[in-house]
Length: 217
Length: 217
Picture 1: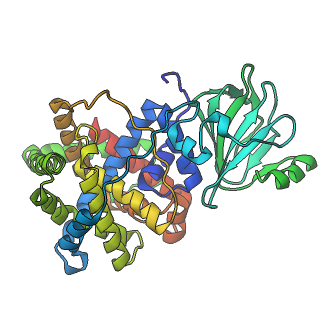
Picture 2 (picture 1 turned 45 degrees about the horizontal axis):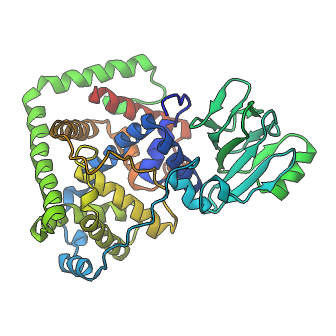
Picture 3 (picture 1 turned 135 degrees about the horizontal axis):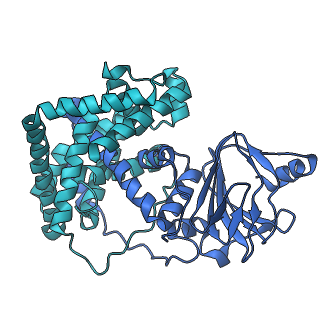
């Protein structure tokens, strides 16, 4: 847990704390934080800003417009049945936030081949952004691609390398429109990543472009 | 003068201004201490209310929290674009959640206002966006570990300093932070709404965060 070297940006942490990121990004951020104590601590600071702003927003808290019925809430408390405890999932290869979307750990993923031995599973979120699991055999390159928007790639198993760096479990790569890279899965077990993007990726060359339509990357 | 800080400012100038503002606040140490200690007393009272709800389902303690935080939560939701009736319903849910999850509140990890902010934020995502909110795995501290008093006090001091630092931000920076937290807006959406270039927004938010970090040192 201590050797994560690629972390979340301030912008992503602020967005997650404020609740303004698309659901797909929230999932990647929550999964990273489950693995990274440093980003968890940083998130605490961003949530504290929200708390401080909440104190301040009520400078005119006495106004009638903001009045709430206490009785209604007390009645709701009386009426509400005790919350059934949620079945606890044990973290496996996937932290529990991700398991909730997959419906289980690694063995529950419904993989689909997308060529060159690469497999993916798209997870269901709101359509502002998309998120999927990728499984890439060691030594295999992902098609060379650039980005329209922002792409987050979080490694859950194995590792990948691109031109400048190596990413292993817990590391997150944040690529924007300016980046053009060719990630290659490193030696060892298949590289499994959680990848979210808020725009379709653009591939160079004809073949991947057609494949892209079918694969919905 | 402080509010004039903009992207065009070289970084050296910002540093100078940060020093200048530190001097200004040093000039009135008693005033600063006074405001910090009064918000700490208030926080001690809210922590006490939380523990009374948890240990003895104390409705008076709940009413005290309700009267203070209810209108603030409602104001927060209305600033996020919710209608008055939706905000009221959502606030009631937030307060019921506070009652039910009081046992999960840990004063060594978050202030009461921060904890309530996170509940309200999640409820907003749930109700207004109809999305799920993935959360990081809970840290396990061992069996029902009691928070250390020194940690609780340290957190209170930090929260008070943070509130003061937020209030001291130049207006241009503070209003952007506010939009980011309350408007449910990403940086690009703030750019559209304000007509400011995205770069300006990013750099103002970055400057605001730098100032907060400086104040928290």
